[in-house]
Amino acid sequence: MQNVAQAWLVYRLTESSFMLGLTAFFALFPVLLLSLWGGVLADHVNRHRLLMLAYFAGLIQALVLGLLTLSGYVQAWHILALSAVLGIIHALEMPARHTFLSDIVSRENLPNAIALNSSAFNIARFSGPFIAGILVAHIGEGPVFIINAITFLAVIYSLRRMRLPTLQTSHSKDSVLDKMREGLGFAWSNRSIRLSLMLLSVFSIVGTSLTVLMPVFTRGTFHGDSGVLGILLGTMGAGALTGALTLAYLSRIQGLQWYIGTAGMVAGLCLVLFAMISKLMLALPVLALFGFCQTILAASTNTLIQSQVSDVLRGRVMSIFSTVFIGFMPIGSISSGYIADIIGVNSTINILGTVSMLAAGVFLLRQRARTLRENN
Image (cartoon, rainbow, N blue to C red; front, side, top):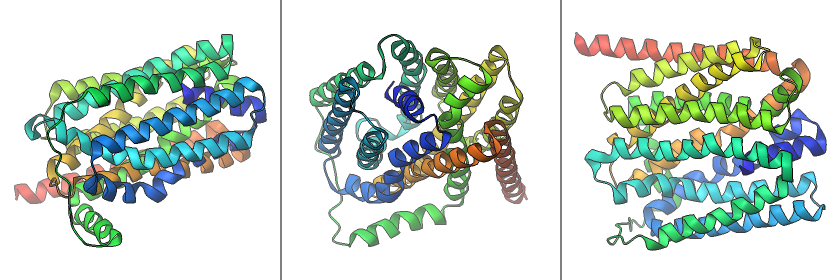
């Protein structure tokens, strides 16, 4: 909800595609800078307490943004600064959250747990934009930020109610840089993880570009308001939820590389089609399919990594996943906003879709070559 309200507020204040991209950049760039350090932290401190602290900080951030907006004093630089604060929180929270799953779920149930966790995320991704679009249209952005602040209380309460065994953490005396290198070395040496992360990095850039530019499509192509924006993003979220539930039903590790490559290819095709569509009703099923494929790709990569990494390195390797999946998004947000101001949003998304299909094609060819070698 906050993402939609914030994007609409920025565009209302500035009417600039570049400012939309810059806001997303400030929110996500700290993840690129700090997530690897957050992975080291997740392996060496109590993850349960770290998560509670992070969510309390998120509550304060949302509350400040809401009060500034309600007071009428909010300016673009306020939003940029608070977005950066939220980015720092995410950088510390995400590796701990992904790793925390393995603390509360047995290893054999981990693929199903990852898919169900992704389903929970995408339920919010589906319902949040839809609700936010309606609320922004009727009561403005400020109350949406306040609602977000209040919901953090439920998250913090849930964590406090958990009764967990003593969680194991690493007590290595190596330097932080050495610990980071250890995690990076493992991810690079494992061919399946390396290739999957490389493809995910492309779709991290591409996926955020479409989301960041959606307010421009809403007004310019579909001639809609914040309610239409909520429908567009909510439809993408509904597709993503369907993808997560599909993975939860399948709940297996075999064939994940083929899921990843095929989902990437279809998602790129969806982008090319979306850039050519001017009718809202035709755009919605394409967005739903894009969301479906995006979740299949990301959640399958998550499962692939967690199934092949040891508990000692889990936080650090999952921080690489967070860096690639979230940390690379600022590159897409700021570059797509800049390019869209020059050549237009349709041409920008068309180019990104083509690049995505090429990247997925290379991934599938490499995977096929490996399968042929193993069979021979």
